[in-house]
Length: 426
Ligand code: GLY
Ligand code: MN
Ligand code: MN
Image (cartoon, rainbow, N blue to C red; front, side, top):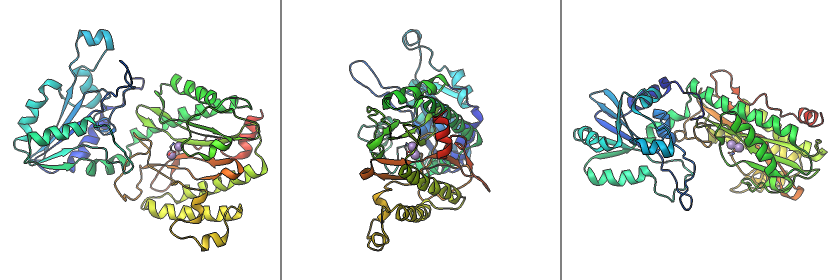
């Protein structure tokens, strides 16, 4: 791994919080992700299953975690792909049992061939089996995951057991970050900040969007990040109105805004930033006007984020702020608002949500309707997209919810128009 070792205390605590909420006499099983095939003899880079990582820190394929709660005592068991000299020659070092214990804090580490025997021992007198699955509300899963294959297998093997979803316990826990996790997200944000610095000294008319992407990638990888936490959006001119644009293959022309939505990954944790810079170094009056509208909404929205708030209520309130800005910009009228039916009038120019959880996943998981709590990390990312004027503006920072005050992990990254213009022109 490229990242510094994460203290095992984090994973010990995560497992203990999960186990505390398990039924007595139950077993929970978590599978790693598959190594996904590309073409011919190639695979895509390996991405660990976020739930397994959260509970163990194990970042290797073909791993399996079992948590057993029996008579209120808790045991953790880890199963790894058995390594050998041939694997060592072709793929390099894999986890041995001692390393796996040191990373995860789990003392009971076995090779995967022992799994069924250990499983049989614990399942025989357990009443509930927790199975893991991707329950993100927007997940569209076409390929059968290792967890899904496992579910078929175990339900056939033990058809009379009671099965529950582990995510009902796990997602509300994952939403509240430990201080160690916040440190890792902060490291990802700091690497992202270095990427922004590099873009500010590189941007000029005539550069290709993918050249900007390459500058950022260089900064990320040399800092110990695996790279982008998600496909970066480097969208100049009209492209800045395409929400998920990532062809990044157009030239940045003088007079254009370039909207850049990118974030570094670090130790599997994500950062998520958006900035909009004028390619020629100066915003036009209209670009500045729209930019400042978005910035005002962002500043107010950041202040709204506080413990106890529900995200649905928050989005409604941000929508009201946006509505006022769009009227002032003469993009919508009071009549449009009066005549709006199911869809608020402001949605014509602001069609996405303002905040999402951030963590091991860029659109991180949480409990359904879980109100905000200290330790949660959310983005704040309002935007206004005006295709008829050839540009869109989005601004995005990552915020830690505090008891009394929030921490903006991106507060040092230039955001005021004057500051950006000054840097671009010096
Ligand atoms: N970069 C994805 C998002 O902002 O939600
Ligand atoms: Mn985001
Ligand atoms: Mn983003």
